[in-house]
Image (tube, rainbow, N blue to C red; front, side):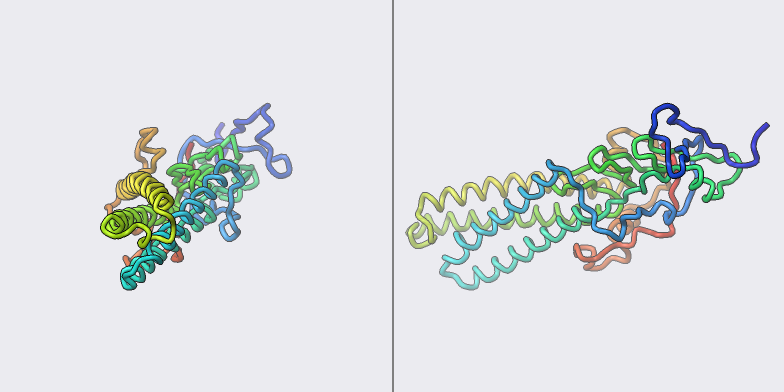
Length: 311
């Protein structure tokens, strides 16, 4: 005889991971259930988010050091020794603005909760508080014992389920998910722009030094100047290619409303199809404005949107 209440079943018997508060067990579901996003909002949404991963921290520090190196070469090797004051002011201002926006985007992408689902909330008490309809059940993640919404995936580095997780990026020491994808896209865009700008300045500086005396076009010795410029050229070219490709894949992922993991796993589409413009507004905010390009603006990701709990 079927119970008039929703059906629940323990999927962690004998593993010791299915215990919640007061000994409650984690649950699994057999069908998707639309539930308000407010139910699965992470408890850390208003707190500082930082992943304590050695590899990610090292990569993030390397990113900052490479930007500082580019700043040093651009200012002290190319711009300050230049005889053209207007050239130095215009390019110095543009380069520093792009560098500031890139670092700000990096910090926001790294220190923003990407959309983590609360850990350990897949308990009987919590499920009963949702007041599900008869016959409804929910899935849980066996690794973090949390109710798993649709399009969420577990990250082994963050040790959490992340809503609309695209991938885990060590360069920002964080997952790229629903809440911080905008900042990651801006980071790749500004790094690509600053790399292209640095390459142009290196080319012009080489041409200028070849036409003039090398001792007058730089505060450093000619061999040191050449080495510094070649290293900057290599760094700029490498990051230009890498971030441009990443920027393109991210924009394509947003327009198609399909995360990198969903594309890789070729998951069946179970969510409503929207236009490319609607998908862009969902990530960067709406309506369109210059705030789309600001890492200091927090977009509205659609608080009224509902999520469905599935594996």
